[in-house]
Image 1 (cartoon, rainbow, N blue to C red):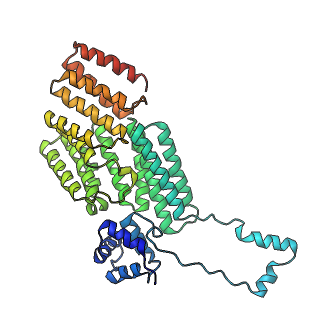
Image 2: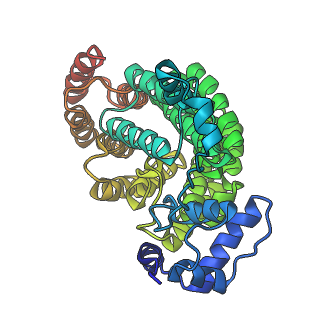
Image 3: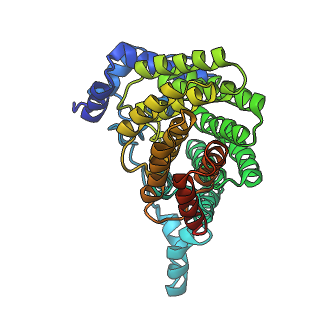
Length: 416
């Protein structure tokens, strides 16, 4: 009997032994309210090919563990049998030339289009393209509209008679697209619009029972609250992200939630902020670096956590440490995350300015415009540079370098 080489390869990539995969699948089952009935023998049957198509709940749990479809893991659904056509059936349908035509067309007239895993994969590929655009250019109305169109298509597919498993996946895709739209509005500094979209995304994530989508939304709620200077709500939203099952299960997501909590605490409680940063770093060290994860979280890693460390340190008054963290962030954030690199550069300029190094700070701040490659500045970046401008005017209003930077700022501001 032919073994399942794809599953074996996926287990090797993730470092799973048979009993460890059984435990991981059982954890997913229990999270969904089912019994954890998978043992080593079950996994062995998957690997040897004895079980070619696992039970639906087990398939769903396997797909959640590996972030791949059952087919991508080497499983194959059983072939459907075609019913035999008897003489009576033939007489009923073959009633002349016209009748034959009608009979041939009958199975397709009014039939519900088939919706399946391929539709989910196609829609998710579209999400990946949107996130790549966001990483380069930042949030803007065209990105938001495209994301909402993707959400609408996913919900339309969900209504076309898919299986329950596929319907839940499509709800999750719709939640992810809606969260991208909300993020685009947030990044464009359109807080009211972002708030409406986040409420919709959280509803869809609940319908999908997708804790990853829920964490994504709570992470964005925390960012929106901080943007609105709603400090306690920022902490509460970040702690809601910590409480999702995916954050409890995967230290990578736990790290992101703790990092967001640290930002929320930074304007309220210095010790709590530093403590949350420590938790974020500890969790990230435990995370599996190459674990397959959705594209919305691709931005997060050591570079981004360094950028968040800079934000927290700057807000608690540790400007020297903030500057060092910004340098480390820029050395680590991948080049394709252009908007994030521009944000980290602006943060570096602020840390330098807060130490009184006006010339260096203005030189650093000016590079943010070059990083965006002539594209209009996203609202969040514009707001951050506005903070820098106000700090600069307060510290050195008459310095020549301040006036030069002010002229550059006004020129770039008018491009948006």
